Image 1 (tube, one colour):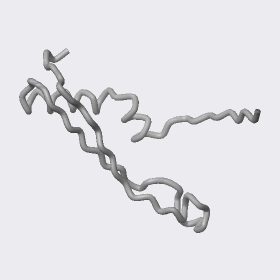
Image 2: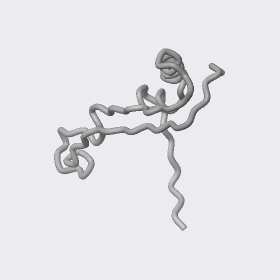
Image 3: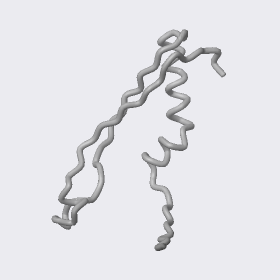
Image 4: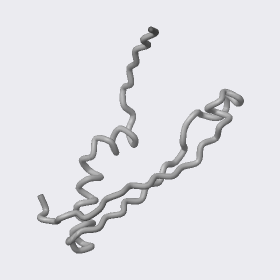
Length: 81
């Protein structure tokens, strides 16, 4: 929509996970990440300013970013076969 052609796009994420929470070894430790960091690497024919604008738009509208950054209702089913 911005008239920019992409040659490549990758997203790298990092975070520290305290396994005591995941494994149930310490009830004071929450199972999950306290902080996640991601780095977007992009290559294309756009200018840095164009890519910043696109990045800001994606951060504002991305369902994946919202699902990670905001509480979302989660339901489940267990199917034993």
